[in-house]
Length: 122
Image (cartoon, rainbow, N blue to C red):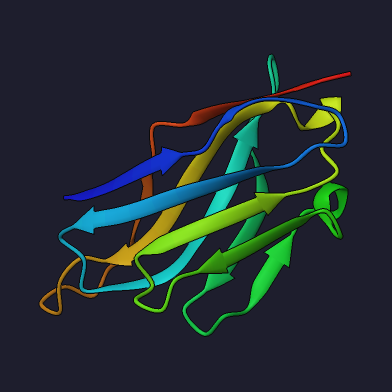
């Protein structure tokens, strides 16, 4: 089993910054990618940013230039630095990891954190 624990959510005024962190633990052999998704009120969950094991990043167009995703050296923690926040960024942010749990298995599992609320006031 894999656990993802997010932290860093909160309330901030437009133009401000927040930093989210997600720590992975449990039955992990390797992590192919980690990322952040968000779900605004009444809307579906969409990709915000991802980072692969090689360090390649991908961002939603709406956050390019404002958000930065990064990973620690061990690859077990992912961060999302959010700058120039806008009211449209208000959402529950979820950490995601694509994990190979054991060398004895070939499948990759996708795991989700519990979510952390980010609220941006105008």
